[in-house]
Length: 471
Image (cartoon, rainbow, N blue to C red; front, side, top):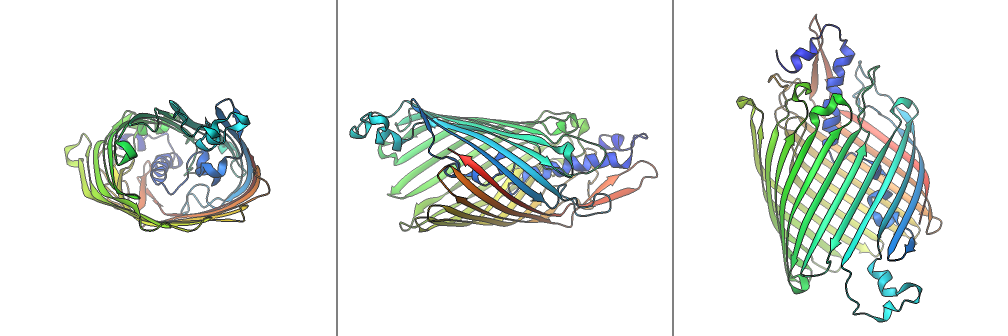
């Protein structure tokens, strides 16, 4: 037996060690789902820059927006367990401290207002800036009371640079970096680090006719995923994405939209350490649709297209191909000035660490309500079905009790914040994530060659309460 088989049958190792193989699969799977937060941006306010920025400090032609938040939390299922006999559910209290600094060139409003008596407000024809940028850095330190060894820091940093913005031709450069430490999917004497670094660099060329009736945007993005622990480095990979987006506005608030992307996925880690067959891949996605407004309060997006992927395993009998329809329908209702409702459906296809790919059919809704300019209430919910490709070990043996996997996923979150001033607020967040599946991992052990079965489903509740200052 090759690959995983040799590793699983080392005589000096104990069954608990083999769950490390299961753990790496689980973390990769959970990572693949957008329903789970990652990085310091998991905080509700960090996902919306308009809620993160206060008045700010002006430094020459720049704005600075610092902030600090401290929260106490509760996690009902730290290790994403299905409460099996080997790894029962473990809950924990959590302390999270988050600091951030956002920065940008002066916004249009401040330029128009002509701060400090500069007289810019009287010059409506002032030339557009040659360069603008927005960026930020944030760090969140976590302390898990029931597992202090897991205490660690997540980091996010980003920068978006626009050269010649607002012109017929402009260039956009982006840089996004993140370090995440979650999720944890095992609780044993064997400690492995789940720290994962992700970096994404992008370049876009923007062509626009007068009035932006027609816009054409070709682009390229280079992505890197790197696991800090040697145990997970089989999942290290490069991602190359070439994209093209065109919009044609034929009504004041309605446009035809077309986008196409080609992705080359290259795993460069040690494949001999992988517990699952991971394949380099080429994927293609192309969609066309409408994005527009029906009334001043109601707008919509409707896209439909085609996606295909080919995954090269090195074993001809295990190469996989995928093709199917992709689609998105979204409606946005501005109920009133401070109240907004969005709901929609998305069918999409993405590469995955297990099964090579997964297809997602998911409905979602978001609601946001600002009361008296001080109390913010927001909620998000989504329910979807996730279908995976064939999940096998490097030698072609099934990793679980079935060859393929299907999950139903439910995620719900509720966020509230009361602002005493424009720089101080109290916030609370409730979150639930559930995975419902019949899929079970089959983990081999040394002689007498028994198999341990571990269900893949889980239920997880989180609650947070804290305060933050921001300026």
